[in-house]
Image (cartoon, rainbow, N blue to C red; front, side, top):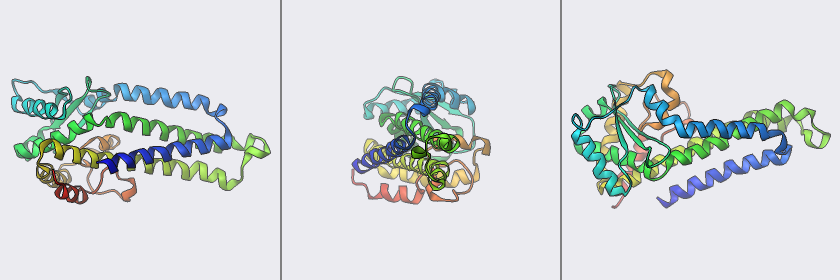
Amino acid sequence: MISNWIKTIVLLGILSAILIWIGSLFGFNGLLAGLIVALFINLLSFLFSHKIVLFMYRAKEAKISEHKDLHSMVEEIASQAKIPKPKVYIIKSETPNAFATGPSYSKACIAVTTGIMKLLSKDELKGVIAHEISHVKNRDTLIMTIASVIASIITFAARFAGMFGSSNSEDNRGNALTLLLLMILTPIVAIIIQLAISRAREYLADESAAHITRKPSYLAHALAKLEAGNKVHPISAENSATASLFIVNPLSGSSLLSLFSTHPPIKERIKKLNELRV
């Protein structure tokens, strides 16, 4: 668990270093407007994205009278994790999946599909709920927002530098190779690091879930079933931007490059879970 926290800190540090490097080449004064815009957009996303995502998937708050067992499970695991019980939502979809969202403990939400409740046993579903509770407990929404803010600013800064760098003085102009590096490679590196942070948080949530339930096998068995289930019932392509929210990749097929994957390989996640001693 500590290694995943260290990895996250190091990756966030690298993102920050890239931003400082760009600033050292061109100065922050010319980028101030872009900085403000990026911060504002990401702040709005952080505060309201959970409502938008729930609306996108037509999630309905689960009634206790209809989903008593699910509410009891969430309450029990939240109590074990020592956080307030998140709100529980149901998504009518054959795609067996789940996600957690919300900017704070008080606004946290966990959404599960009807497909996942059909597919998994009670113990396996408990492992999934523990994973999502762990995302809430570990403040992953906040961490990913910070990473997104820095990556967005880097992308804007690189584009700004490429567009207006040639109008600067000779000392600040830079050569064509530097501009090419800023415009093309820097945003790609920022995205890769951002996705690497996302994968590190998934590993951390898996490990945290195993410690909460004391049964790593619950989540390990669930992941194996979910990987197969999501290949049979993937979500629509237009919702690909929210794929990183889910416990397993809900899109059909696999990523062209592992560097650009929002999720670690399921086999690797299961292996790490099976190696845990809790």
